[in-house]
Length: 121
Image (cartoon, rainbow, N blue to C red; front, top):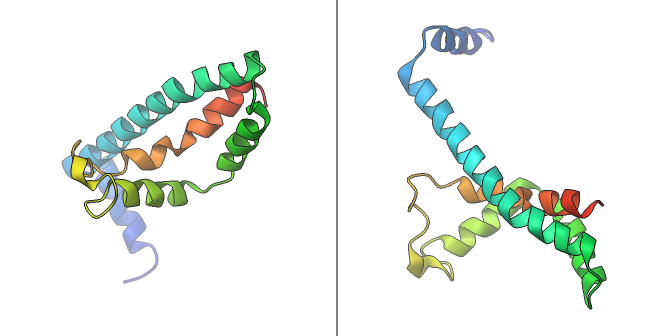
């Protein structure tokens, strides 16, 4: 097995419209779009609130939001997984496989980004 064998196989699967491969790609796109939509719904109003109003605790909230931007998505996904896994504090809700896939929360780690963009930082 040489270096190019997996690459050739991958190209053949793409060109041959392999049903399983395109099902995986479609599910990944669906999960990503739902996660980005949820992050926008949460992040944009919070960012607009941070940008528009002066209130007690605004400074620390901005610092926390900017700090969350530095977290790698893998860390956010691991924390969410630990929260919603059956042994976690929210395990009784049985959310881990509720949607048929389990990496939606991983992508929702972009909410701090949308919040900061909306706030104009």
